[in-house]
Structures are given as structure tokens and as C-alpha cells.
Image (tube, rainbow over all chains, first blue to last red; front, side):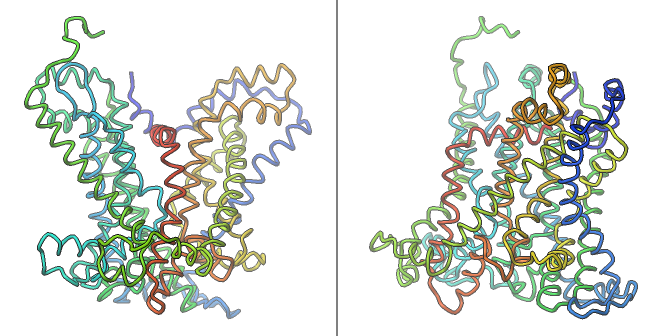
Length: 338
Length: 288
């Protein structure tokens, strides 16, 4: 029997070819009726029209604009080749923003995934080590509460944490001074360039751990209990079971989580805009997306902004490619058969 | 089968188990507190006056009055933004679910020249960052006269929610048995009837899952409205950001906390009521 994981692998790319033969049998040539023609026109034409006009066409245009000096409101668009890209890569502020995005991409997925994996493992296998494999008692309460942040709009999360980090009236400094750490009185977490980025990252982690925890719990529950029992009979402890059974078997879930979190880290616009809309002290929390937004909608340099968008898109593709490659190289494509 | 008969009904818990259990509960409780304390604090602060907030972060409000909520709802415009959000998200959600289901159904059930190309086009829409599209999209809408309007916002929401919807429902429609379509065809149902009366009702569980994710995604959307609806009737996320942005000049923290609470609480209540279904959706959404 194959696991869910192996089904996942070919889920996206291979679904179309895999079913082609099945369809061929079904497809006897019938005369085109009005029913059929109208059906295809509406069912395929309508969604595609909206999708092409509002999604695909802008994406294509962005590549074109990125090669011009267009300022948006002037009619002349001069083709300037890769000049915008040269400008971007010599712009200290944009490079700083890119560096911050790279920091986010390195740390955000790792921290979020480790934390949510640990919590998910505690919930699912924290129960008794005798008899049937059991989850922790009353664990659904933790799961429900942990998921709360996912239902809150990112902008509200950002504003809320902005207040929590407030130097004088905020919850955090209130707690810290309350337990006797007086050096944090009036400490500006978001105003100090050493802590602004860490504080911001924590907010994003706070927002996503619950979601990934639920995802991993679902993955772990999909593993047949016999496997855990076999491992236990073979004398594997909890930690060994988690490392050698759980993680390999929910590997695809982890890869998906890693890619989602990485794409989010390359954007991160909402959180940054809410917590430090100006880019933070010494631009320590400035991200590429913010720079793009300023360049486009405040400065009106649409050509340059589009080039930034292309850089962002390429960074996203490189990141996803890297994750797939690393997963493959470390043996993730091996068919885990049960 | 396991030989359950030979096991005591309630296995004696060893000390090791107790320790692990205690440690697990402690760790989970700590995280739960980290999640819930900020929310409770925000809710509590939403009843305080600005001077009370400055005096101490922990003090209870002197009076539990709704002044801040009234101020946020009417003066700060959170009320109208809330209604705008409800309208935009509801309409966009209905449209994207119908169009997405139709598109996914055709792609999953019929082969025709170009069906594969359309599939990959959808994949592209999921991969590229929305940011890349914003500048050209601004002008697409401007040329259509839809910039800074709610219908414009709705159409863009539909466009960007479509690829996810199609992907998810694609695998769902694929898994429905073919015999049923054939039976419907034998009974004389046309393509339209087969879809609306046979396939769509069968796809209900899948539709519910996608609808939940689309709702959260669209309700939380921030970048799209601030880019293409900056001067239009604001939606909730926009109004919140604008309200927080002018805080530096007119400090009314109590009203800000109230505005955040108004944003958070309705969805949270709905979540708590339907959390069982939602947890199911998460697992379903990821195993496909």
C-alpha cells in the first residue's frame, strides 16, 4: 500500500497525463449540441476570461514594464533594457531590504516548522506509552486555541503586537518589569535595531504556528497506528519514534509548509507595514515588497517597481526550487511504502 | 488485529508517562497562554480610556463602557469598512466558488486540446507573488474604470482566488466516480443539469473546505485593497491600517483596541462554532 505522501508527489504535475487514457475510452465522438457548446463556453470561458485579464495579463505586462523607464502617468515609455535591474542591484536600500528578506527566509520557516512539529508531536503521541497509541488527554483544546491567530487578519495581528511591544504601555514590558526585569522599562522593542527584526519575526511565527500544528497533527493522524506500535515493540522511545517514523512519513507536509512559509517570508509586507511602516530603525525591518510599494505608489516609478517585482518573483522561484532540490537530495523522493 | 483481550482495560501509567504527560501539558499550556494572553489583553484594553491605558497595562478598565466601540464603529469608519468587507468578500466568494467549481469540473472531466496548458496556467498563478501583478493591475483597472471601486476589487479577488479553488476542486472532481455521470447522461440529463444537479451536490464537502480557506484568505487580504482601492470605499483591513497610521497624531488607543477587537471577534466566534469542520478541512486540504 502506498502512503498519502507518495500520492501527493504526483498529485500536481502528473494528474493530467495519468488520467488521459481513462478519458479516451469515455470520449466517443458525439455531435456538438447547443447544450455542449454553451456548457464549454460558460464553464471554461468565463473563469478563464477573468483569470487571464486580472491575473495572467498583469503578470506578463510586469515583465514588459520592467524593461522601460515608465513613470505611469506620462505617455512615453522608453525601452531601457536591463537598466532598472542594474539600478536595483546597486541600490543600497534595496539590497538591505533583500538581505532582510533572506534573513526572514532562513529563519521564519525553520522556527515555525520546528515549533509546530514539536507541539503537534506532543499533542499526538504525548499520551500513555502502554496499550493503544494515544494522544494527550484534552489536547483538542490546545489545538483549537493555537489556531486562533490564523483566523485574524494579518494587519490586525500587526497592530495588536505593535501595541504589545509599546515601550511604556505595552503588555510585554509590563510583564517583564512585573517579574523584576527593570532594564526593560520603556525598552522600545521595535525601535531598537537589534531587536526590531527578532520582535517582528516572533509576530509572524505567532500567527502561523497554530495553522501548521493543525496541519501536522492531521498528517501524523494519517499514519497507521500499527507503525507506531511496531516501533514501540522494537523498543523505540518517543524521541526516536518522532525522528525516525513521524518526520519521514509527514515529510511532504513539511515540504509544503516550508515552501508556504518561505514565500510568505519573501513577501512579509503586511506585518512590516503594520509594525514599522517606515522600514524600522536603520531599515532593519525593511523588505523588498515595501520598497516596491513605495517605488510604485508613492514615487510613481512603475518601470523600476516592476523590475523589483520580477526580482521578487525570481527569488520565490529559486527558493521553491531549492526546497524541492534539497528534499530530493536528502532522499525525500524515495517512495515510502508501508 | 491487536490482541486487546490480553491487556488490562486501563493500562497502569508508569512514572515516565506521567512525567512526559506533565511536560507535554506544560509546554502546550505555555504556548496556549502566549496565544491567548495578547488577545485577552487587547479585548480588555478596548474598554479602557487612553489615560487608563497609559497608567498601567494590567489595570482593569474603570468602567465597562462601549464608548470606544461606538467611536471606532462610527467615527473611525470601522462600521462602514466592516460592511464593505462583508459585501466584497461574500460576493467574491460566491462567484469564485461557482466559477472555480465549473472550471475545475471541465478540466478534471474532459480532455480537449489545451486543457493541459490551462492547468499549467493555473499553476503559474499560484506560484508567482501577487506583488508582481499589482502595478499592471492598477492600470488594467484604471482603463476599465474599475479602479477604486468595490466591483473592481471583487473581480480581482475572484481572479486571484481562482487558481487555488480550481486546484483543490480539480482533485475532488477527479475522485468522483465516472459511473454517475454516465447514469445521468443515460437518464437524459444534459451537461448543465449533470453539473448542477448531480456533480455539484456531491462535491459539497470539498466546496465547504475551499470556501473556508477562500473566506479567510479574502477577509485577510491587505495588499490588493491598498494597491488598487487606495482611494475607494475602504475595506476592513485598509481602514484598520489607516486608523492605526493616524494614531501618531490623534492618540486614541482605546478606540484602536476596539477596532481590532471588532475585526477579530466575529470571525473567532464563527471559528469556535465550526472548528470541528475546519480542522477536517485543513487535513483534507493538505492530503489532496
